[in-house]
Image 1: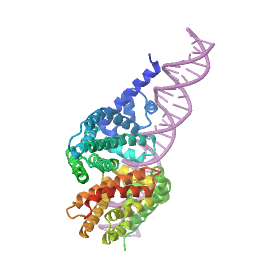
Image 2: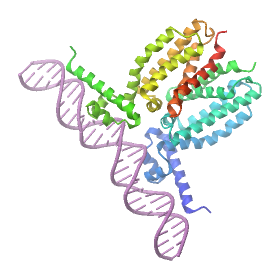
Image 3: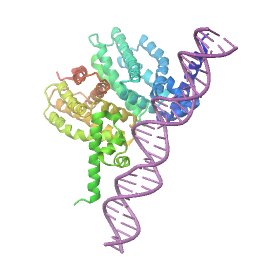
Image 4: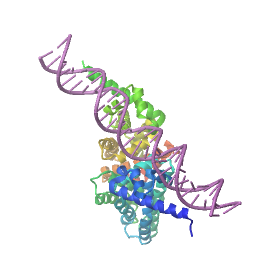
Length: 205
Length: 205
DNA sequence: ATAAAAAAATGAACTGGTTCATTTTTTAGA
DNA sequence: TCTAAAAAATGAACCAGTTCATTTTTTTAT
């Protein structure tokens, strides 16, 4: 049986995360106040800071927790890839982004990207970078599979190509999150079109 | 003769900008305190806020002011383009980024990018977007010139290609600003390599 | 030149994220 | 069971960006 201390810690952490998720989702990052989150989790503000470095840590934690959920879907797609190059790549991206966006909404993602750039040096920035890198790696894995299946040319450097596609997609996702007007469908169309442009010359003949 | 009020306003604004530039450059965005900037400009804090919306507005103003200086160099390059596709595109990017980075340093640029994403909705975010869009347009202009010169294939959509290259480069610049370790030369090599990868298939045969 | 109106400057007060000295709770040892 | 040490919770205080009611300066009209 785990000690009382451990149990209480786990319980408190869970309550804080739930309270934060609730706040971030309903009023957004900016309007979510640490005071309120603490109150809702039935702890003091200081305690929140014992469990999380700061407000952005709280947001990042929500994102990474949620990632577990999406991971499986992407793995399945890689294991069972479409026969079309663009579909394969976009499939990986959209699996990720559609869930992410629904989960947290644009405003939170704006802050997440912003914070991840500003605090890139810190532990937190590194955590987001690692999280992000997982997506890049998945795209490269997808490219490798497509290469083996004879959809992508064999002389194509998938590592490099993956990096390029990832960067293009990231900018599009930032643009989507940055524009309250832009729809997810528009984002998808833009990404697909760009992927097509870059990939077409490297499709196996 | 301009009125006393106008002259005083112009003078105060200039002093504030100079003080802010000094602070941002020496101690960085985070450590630059509005109190100190106001003191150095010989005005009160409130007055700084009469002239600039907020701290980030101050930073953005510095960037856009400096852009005037770089503009000419890029225009000359477009008017007198190199015979190589990658050189042409990279020339535009590097003219911009080398000056920008020297001018403000990585830390300020991290904050600029971060803020521009977070505050994309606001007047300020729009101002940065416009500033950024000028660079994209210049790249497209360069592509058009290269197309006319027979360096880039005629059937290539320069608008689309320009957008893609711009997004790739922006991500690389963010990565450069985000990593205290990465050198400008490394950034250049990475961008050049990616440009090469995307452009090669579209080089005129 | 003087007074009323308009514009601008001022700095004290507000806000909310974060810290830290103090108090409370839990554990381990006798 | 009782006590000292360790771990954790607490909330008042801190800090810096921002706001706003008040004061000062400048302009305009008489």
